[in-house]
Length: 380
Image (cartoon, rainbow, N blue to C red):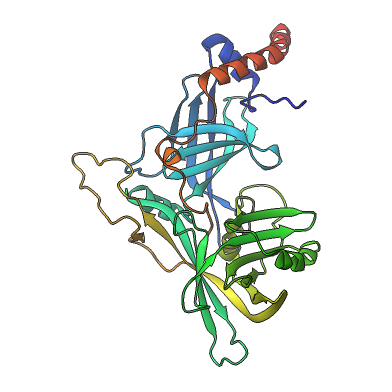
């Protein structure tokens, strides 16, 4: 039988606080990291975030972000674990989402030193973050990728494609330029040896196509998008992104499937090939080079929160593209979740633990840690 306790991140000081005051108060503090062109890992900027979370009251504060037009006064906070049981704190300030990776405990202050990254939306620098924070109508981000194909057999001019990911709610994306009408992206795969997989999909592959790709998956990493052409025919676009980077830390390859491509394009352009599956066979049609075109934002139906009386009211048409005023053609980009959250998640976030459950879990933790506390006090 597997038994776990929630929250899974508790120190002796937290237990002592629970015994004295009825609930621990978590403090997370550390720099906010951003991606950097030409570097696989992210680097800390000048901003330092400070998150305080009262577990018993389920109240949190967030300090250190620039500006902040139209955000709720208090963020939603959850504590959990990420890849390889790395302790994390998730902070939601709709539509902004931040993940903090806990590195160590500062024994003198009791603060949990943390590395923070923004997981939603795509914000490549502190300057873009400041612009986003002060625009009430900017919501979720989406991305455009330019794919320059070599001429196919019988063609004299190269074929330019545009891949858009995450623009329409509930859809993975679209590919323009291969046929007269845009093609829907129905599946994205990032697969590697030893059954390591990351998949975003709206449809399963035909069995014959899946069988043809199976042998290649056993020996190397592959990143592919699949677009249906006609019945039982698919366009398969493969990007040579390689394996995920070694080590742990703040990089997008471990977030979701779309991030793999977008973080790689943030680092460098990517080569690949386009093939067509028909008559139970795959035929390579052309090769290409892909580069990030730009990152855009979907406008919210209404401002994140009503403006103050002394501020002008922001208006726009729902779904309108919003480009920051200081926008410059970007050479890099990172990826985020495909499509928006549900209305409940947008309005309030998901509370990770009810108050009664949290207190019950802490009582169990106290029972386990009480002996350690007694021993520590006897030594004094």
